[in-house]
Amino acid sequence: MINTMFVSQKQKHIVETPDTGKWELAGYEAALPVTEKSNPITREIDKADPVQIVHLLKECDAEIFQEEDDTLVNYKRLYSASVLQTMMDVTKKVEAILKDPEHSLIILSGCGTSGRLAFLLATSFNKLLKGLHKNPSYAYIIAGGDKAILTSQEAPEDNPHLGVEALKRVCAGKKKVLFIGISCGLSAPFIAGQLDFCLNNLDVFTPVLVGFNPVSMARNEIIEGWHLTFRQVAEKMEEVQETRRAFILNPAVGPEGISGSSRMKGGSATKIILESLLLAAHKATSNNKEVTAKNLLDWMKTYEKVHKITYSQGKMIAAMVKQAGTSLEKMGRIYYIGWQTLGVMGIIDASECVPTFGTDFSDVRGFINKGYKEMANREGDLTSRGPEFEISHEDFMKNVLPDVTENDTVVFIFTLDDDLLEIEKLANQVKNKTPNLHAISHVTTGQYVSANIKKTFASVMSMTWPIVFFEYEGFFLQKFQRELSTKWILNAISTGGHILKGKIYFNHMIDLKVSNSKLFRRAVAILQRFTSRSPIICQEALLKSIYETDDLSDEIRNIKISTHTTLAATKFKVVPTALVLLTRNCSVAEAMSRIQAKPVVRDTIDRYLTAPGRKRTADQIEMHRDEENE
Ligand SMILES: C[C@](O)(c1ccc(-c2ccc(S(=O)(=O)c3ccc(N)nc3)nc2Nc2ccccc2)nc1)C(F)(F)F
Ligand SMILES: O=P(O)(O)OC[C@@H](O)[C@@H](O)[C@H](O)[C@@H](O)CO
Image (cartoon, rainbow, N blue to C red; front, side):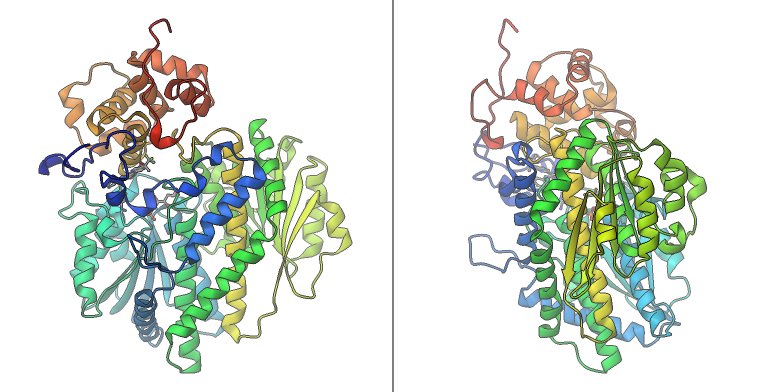
C-alpha cells in the first residue's frame, strides 16, 4: 500500500501506481478522471461477439441519462438541478446575443471530435437562423483548422497560444461574445488558453466550459509555455460563475466504453446538452417566452427516446458490426455514403478511427452529397490538399468505387426526404462491386422504404421517428435526433469492427499513437495498469521505446513532452513495445521484433501478462515473471 498518492511537489502530476489489486483503496481511482476510467460494463468487451458488443455499448450510452444517486461518490448528472439551472443561465446569454447579431457572436470551440461537433452545431444553428431570414450569429473554431474536421490533428490540442490566436481572429470587431469551449476531459490546453483569455476580457467575453469531469478532476499538469493548468483555469471559472459572468456545464456521464475515447459518450452528451440549450434559447426568442428548467428537461428527455429507438435495432446494428469486423480482418475498407448532415456524421466517425485505432485514413472513409458545398465549412473546398480530403459522392465514384471489392463494406445513410432516385442509381453502381451494401434510413411515421430501395441493399435498417408538431425548432430537433441515432450506430460499427479485428485489450486501446500530451499520459497509465510498475519505470520504458534506445540519457529524460510526442507520432507500436520491455526485461530491438512478429496486440500481450489458464482481469494482472527457460 503506498502512503502518498503523489510524488514530490515538483512532479506532482505523476501519480504513483497502487499495489496490485489496491487501485480502488489507494484513492487512485478517486483521483482518476471519470473520462479516463475503465468502465466495468465493458471490461471484457474484447471477448464479446457482435450482439454482446452492441449490448455493452448500449448500456454505456444509457449511463448518459442516469439520474444523480446517493452512492458514496455522487457527481452531478445531466438532469441535476444545478446543471439545468446553469443551462437556463446560459440560454439567457444566448438570447441576448441573438438580439444583436451584428455586434455579437456565439463561438463554439474544441479539439478533435469536440471541434468537429463545434463545426456541426455552429453550421446547423446558422442554418436555423437563415431559415428565419436572420443573419448568422454562430462561428466555430477547431484546433488545427478545417483540415482537422477530416483528419487527425493531435498536436495543436497542446498549444494554448494557437487557441488564443484563433479566438482573436474569429471574433475581431465583436462587442459581445459568448464563448463555448468544449473539452470532454477538462484537459485540452488549446481550450484552457481560450478560457483564460476570456476570463481576462470579461467586458466582451462570457466563457462557458462544457465537459464531463468534476472541476476537482480537471487536468492539473503544467501546460508547456503557459502559466496555468487546466484545473486552475476551471477553478477561476468557478469563482466567476458566482457572479454569473462565466459558466461550467460539466455533468458526469460515466466512463467511456473504450477507456478515454471521449468521441463516444462525450461527443453524444455534447450534442444533447448544447442542442437542447440552444434550441430552447431560439424558441424562447421567437415565442418571446422565458426558458424554464422543465423546457430543458423535456428537450433532453426526447434524446433518451432516441437511445431507445436506435438500440431497438440492436440485432441489425450487430449484423453491421459483424460485417465491419469481417471487412477489416480481410484488410478491406468501410465506406459511409451519407446525405446532408448524416454525411457529416459519417465523415466525423471515419476521421476518428485514425487516432483512436491507429489505422490508415483509407480504412474507414465518409462521403457526403455535394461535398464541401453541403459541408459549408469556413475554409471551403479542401479537395486539393490530398486524397483524404476527397469527400463528395463524385470523388467516391471516380476515385474509390473502381477499387471496391467484396472485402469492402459500404453503408448508405439517408432519409426519405433525400433524392431517392439518386440513391438508387448510386446504390446499383456500388452493388456491382460488392454485395456488402447496407443502408441506414431515417423515416417519419407513415413513410416506408420502397420495395425498389429495399431490394437494392443487402440490409436496410429503417429508423421510424414520430412526426414532430413543434414549431420550426421541432424540425431541427428531429434532424439533431437522426444525427445522434446515426452517431451511435456508426460509433458501434467502427468500434465493434476494430474490436473484432483484435485492436482492443479488455476495454483499452493499448496500441495508441502517442501524438499529444494527453495520449502520452494515457500510455504511461496503461503501462502502469498492466504491469503494476511505478510511473517512473513505465515512463522510462515508453521513452526507450520511442527513442529506440536501451539506455536513456538524462538529456532525453529531461526534454519536454512535446519533443517526445512529436517523435512518437512518427512511430508504430511504441506502447506494446514498452509493455514487452517491462515484462521481458529485454532489449528494445528484441521487443520490437517480438511485436512485429505478432501483429495482433491482444495475443502478444496476453502471452506476457497472464500465466496460462489463469482467469485474467485487468486489476489482478500479475506481472508475469520470465520463465528462465523461455
Ligand atoms: C484506467 C487506467 O488506469 C487509466 C487510463 C488513463 C489514465 C490517464 C490518462 C490521461 C491522463 S491526463 O493527465 O492526460 C488527464 C486527462 C484528463 C484529466 N481531466 N486529467 C488528466 N491522466 C490519466 N490518469 C490519471 C490522471 C490524474 C490522476 C490519476 C490518474 N489513467 C488511468 C487504465 F487502465 F486505462 F490505464
Ligand atoms: O474533448 P477533449 O477531452 O478535449 O478531447 C479532444 C480530443 O482529444 C478528442 O476528441 C480526440 O480527438 C478523440 O479521438 C477522443 O475520442
